Structures are given as structure tokens and as C-alpha cells.
Amino acid sequence: MSKSPRVYLIILGTWAALLALLVPTSYHQAAQAADAGWPVLTLVVASAVFIAYFWLNGTKDIVYTLYYHLVAARRASPVPRRPAGAPPRVVLVYCTCNDFSADSLARSMRQRYDNTEVVILDDSTKPEYLAMVDAFAAEHGVRVVRRADRAGFKAGNLNNYLRTAEFDYFVILDSDEIIPPGYVDRSLDYFAHYGNAGIVQANHVATRNRNAFMRMFSIGVDSHWVAYQTVKDRYGFLSLLGHGAMVSRTCYVAAGGFPHVVAEDLCFSIAARDAGLLTVFAADVICEEEYPVDYLAFKKRHSKWTQGNMEFIKRYTAVILRSRMTWFEKLDIVLFTYNLPLTAIFSLYVVLHVIALPLLGYQIVFPLWMLLPTAVFLLAPMLNDIVFHWRTMSGRRLIWYTLHTMLLYGSMLFISIRSSVTSAFGKSVFLVTPKEDQHVSLRQALVANRSEIVFGVALLAISLILVGSALPVLLIAVPAVFCTYLALKHNRPQPGAPADAPVPERPPA
Image (cartoon, rainbow, N blue to C red):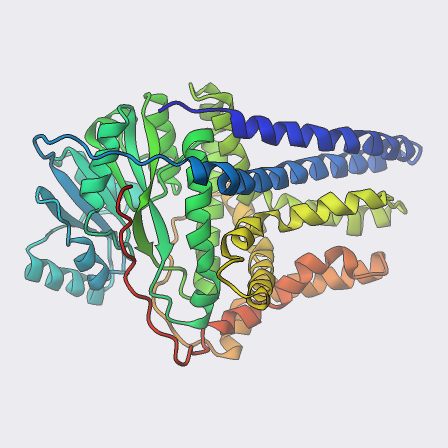
């Protein structure tokens, strides 16, 4: 399989057209700011650079969405069955750390492919989980591997077993992962079809949604996986995404094992790519994962992702620049992976316009036409959800979902800032996302989100005092204040809502 720059040529071409409109305006603003002194000029130029970066990310989301729905989804060609031959040895590697799910693993073990072994890599420390793993292993005849230390997070757990194990391919299973019965058999078809494949990443949907929070937001998983990974597969950089992926021994050896970092999946994929091996997307192999069980679990996962990406920026920026990847694969990594930590820069933009410039007695006047692209790009990350679900959801429900999604991701700004700063000046930490559904009281929700609430209220107060209006910070402050509402949302039951049924496999065309 070869990669094509087509999508990124469209993205950059569209962005260039927007810059052609932005540059004259920004130049005029900078010329006016020059009369006010170099501090003001510096801030005005920084504002223009941020807007240009913001528009580039928005353009990327819009082009990705439209290209998938208008082009890529219609051009998908089925991967044929592989010819008969000696069955390679496949190991299902189940990773757990105080979050063992017997049901998930038992269902994943029901493979129609015979030459499959299951190994539990248990990093648990709590006695109850250690006992659960041992009981399951004794009942099903599964091997359990434990290590003396916890070095290297999940990567260290995987390497501890894989470096001495015998296998031709291995499959990474997280604790909540459920792979379909034909997973191994179908993934091997992809390896046979693509001679330069080192990793086959399966598709995913969110199931077992047992409360209002999970049911509200989990549909974003169903739309995001298939759209974004399909486009990345051919037109960007597709990475192993941590679970539901099959890896060949050749790839594991060529990449030198999993690096001991939080974002071990991304860094491993880059090493494999430099060794001439690709990650390919198996859209017709649909696995099941669980959405974070509540708002606090979602926030913890977001913190882990932000820390992992910041650690990646510090340690792998030079690696990417030296890599043998194509220019558009490198740009794809930058726009997607750097996005979470760089969200924190948005706070600097707010500080610039709400605090720094008002204190200097200066105000940037934006032309009215700039409101249109700015509003469009604010909604761009949600465009794929809207397009994907508008035929199956009522307009009222879709609007309700979109507003809640804006609240959810808008409320992550503070945790993004804190996680980015913590990781930038210290060590990143691999946080295990909680899986247990527990009732949260109003007091617990207020205490757990007190930093976000103080952050939002302080922004509103500062904006009112210095600018005379709360409008400049509403999109940040309102989600921060409403995080308590989100933290309580999972408490609400879903009367009459049936449990999620198992996801049927999509037969190859």
C-alpha cells in the first residue's frame, strides 16, 4: 500500500486561501500596533499566529470529514481472503492493572482461529483483582505473567513478556476490549494482502453504555474511529491506537520493542514506519470498547493523553524531523498529536486579549468577515459527529448532543493546561482510566472539580473588570463552571433503555 498526499494538499490549499485573506488584515493590525510600542506589536503578531494555527486545525477537521463521507467511504475496496497455508501462531495479550474484566476477556477468547493462545499480563496491585485474575486463569487454563516492578508503564508490561515469548503475531487487548470471533482470522487476511503491513488496527465502537453519561457521549467513538482512521490509512499517519491491534513479530523486532513512554503506541508505530512497515486499518473488523464511565474518568483519561502527547513532543520532535516518513505523514502527526498539549496555548490567547492588551490600554479590532471562519472552525471538531449521525438522530437530539459535547471538551481546557505544564517540566504519568460506575454526590462533584470552577469564575470576573464584558471568555468559562453538571450526569438512570447488544461482525464484501 502506498500513501497519497492528496488530502493534505487540499488542506494546505484551503488554508493558503484563508491566509490570503488573513495576512492583509493582520498586516494592517500590526502596522497600527507598531505605533503603540513593541510590547503591543508582539502581542498583536502572536494573536495573528494563533488565529492562523487555529484555522489550520479547523481546516484539517473539515477536510477530513468531508473527504471521508464524500470520497473515501465510497471508494473502499474489500480485502480478499488469504490463500490457505500453515496457520501462524497468534497470542492474545490481555493487559490489566486493577481493572480486570472477566466477561470482556472470555468473549474475546471465542476465536474461530485455532492456533491462538491467551496470556494475561497482570500489573494489578489490589488483592481483589489479583484474586479475580487467578480464578479466571485457573478456570480457563490461561497463563498469567506478572513482573517484579512497574517500570515503563504498559510498554514495560508488554516488553516483559514479548521479548522472550514465541509467537508470529500478537494482539493487544485492554481490559475493556472485546474482539469479535473472526478477529484473528480476518486480521491475518490484511497481513497477507498488504506485504508491508507491520500492524493491523481494527475498527471500534463503544458498547456496554450503562449510564446517562456513557450513552450521551459514546456515539462519538462510533463516528470518529471509522472516519478518521479510514482517511489516515491512506492519506496521513495511521498509528497503533493502544488496543484492538495485531502486530507481527517482524514489526516488533524491527521497532525494537515498545518504548517506555506514556504514548507507547504512537512511538512504536513511528519506529515501525521508519523500518518500512505500515499500520493499516481494518474497517470491517469491529471491536468493542467502553467509553469512560463518568466525567471524572473522562477527565483522568484526557490528562493521560495530554501528558503522553507532551512527553512525545519533548522526546520525539527531533525523531519525526529525521524520520523517513513522507512530509504529509509528519504534518499529520503534528496536527493531531500536538493538538492536545497546544490546547493550553489557547489560555495564552485569552490572557493576551482579556488581560495583557487591556492593561496596556490597547484593543485589536477584528473585521466582521473573520467571524464566519472562526465560528465554523469552532464547530469543526464536531462536524464528523453531526454528519455521521444526522440521519439516525432527531434534530433536537443532535443539537442536545452537540451542546453537551461543546461543554465536555470545553471543560477540559484547565486539565489540559495543568497536565501540559506538569509534563513539560516534569515526568509524564500513565494514568489508568477508572472502570467502576459509582454514585457521585453534589459535594464530591464540587470538590473534584473545584479547580475548574475557580478557573471559570476567575476568567469571568477578570473579563468583566478589564474588558467590561464576559463575551470573550464565555466558551471557556461556561464549560468550566458546568463541569459539576457533567460530573453528576452519570448518576441518572436510563429507565427502559435496553442493554447494548453485541456488535455483529461485518462480513467481507
